[in-house]
Length: 398
Image (tube, rainbow, N blue to C red; front, side, top):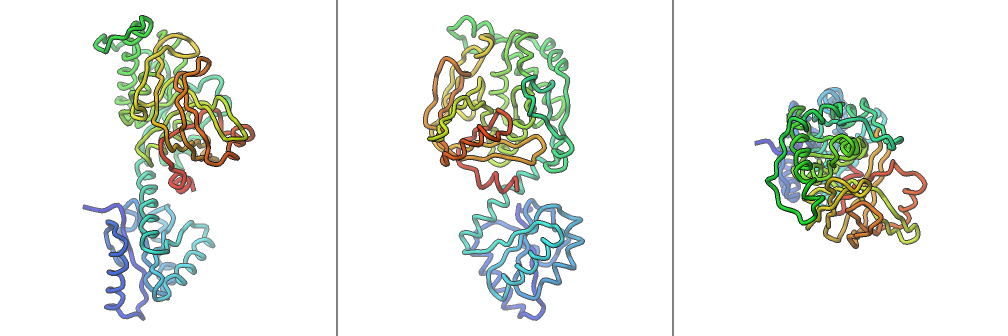
């Protein structure tokens, strides 16, 4: 079985082979990671999510230069140069990295104590696996973006080039036809609120129809022009999106493609899709913010209540309660040229009457980052995900 990490070597012929082999065994063993040792068999370069060059000695710069044309054909990812710091390996790695930069290529020297190197390799591998997971996948916009999303457009060629994803355009009518073909199912928990009880069969009908669309088009995710459902079927997609997200399908609101891309990246890196929400109030001095929306993935929350949709007062909305603790706020632009990342703490789940149903009070770790939302935001929706993931997300975007 192939491991996710492949290690190749660069070694000068001037060095003693037995001594180098012994040093290699000691150094790689100290990292305590799983890998395939490919040595100088470069034919498999690029076949694993993460490919590392272990620069074992000095005098190896010319070897890499000769290999470079082949490597550029095999992989478009940065070149990672692993060094133990012995036998002039760091000096050689610095010369190699300088040459790569001159050629317009990206690279990094992975160097330090064994614990740091191991942590860095694990993070690089996580990012590489996330990129591999997104490549060749199909995502979709079901209907056009909501009319008010005037700054939340998508650049499909850039999405294809940088993430390897295909973005499909599915007419809203296809979903409406699928809903009409899907029978109502009253086999669900009773609800004491008569409005919710009446709306639940239709909300689950929308869920099953969306699941049918996902299966038909082999989608890993979608964003839905959900407000059209209010007038066409007198119901909401909030319950369906909460359920589908918890099942591993990225499911976004309002036809917002940049938010869907943000959720897809978060999902690939962390396994969680995140909470697509609107900033509602900001204390610019303390960095405290309220985020709100009428749906949240079921797998992010401890418990939930079923209410009506906030703006319309109809259908089914979700008030979810996420565990207080560390969170990350993330958003990418539709052309993937800009991104925002902030870490903070969810301090309280609110229940204010004048906001969407799920409400989170979050305090930013760096209060100054609140200024971004008032001076240079990337649209209105932002993604909240439990845990601190800033380093992984920055590594992915860079």
